[in-house]
Length: 232
Ligand SMILES: [Fe+2]
Image (cartoon, rainbow, N blue to C red; front, side, top):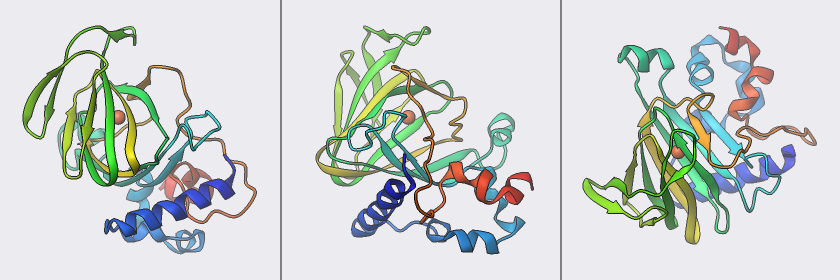
């Protein structure tokens, strides 16, 4: 992706989230200069992969296949292993109308996906086989505390405030209906390096062509722009 495209996507997402009255934490607004002025006191942001995460899943067509994520809080894998400390994660996300987040499941992460604002959220569901295939079996989910049993390939539609709990091995493909949708994710510690399996192979973090300066740093930028915090 070109940096100019990423900058535009972040600006649009900031405006959309603000219009929905969802306020992000201060580090969401840090410039490259602000990052240069902070020291090891901000290391948690880097170590726990907090912040902006824009992806086109390596498909080169963000409008059709992509996602804006902002990780608000997240623990570390040590927390998850020891069941001590910050064992949770919260993200905010934006899926544009006509855009899809490709079908994937997690091996460890249990996540609640919550429709927050804008259009409705559509989640297509399958059970995953051990080999990564779709199983032709009924899906059992909890939708706001109510158990539902659905045929394979069903789509759950969530209006604002409604949520669904996705267990590991629940393949989910996300899109929106009736406009771009802001949605939340509340889960156990998130590990994007090891815990995602996509039904069709895709990329997760984009290669960036630097055609202009970054407006905001992405999670994938930290190693390059604030290496002293990565090492700390
Ligand atoms: Fe997911």
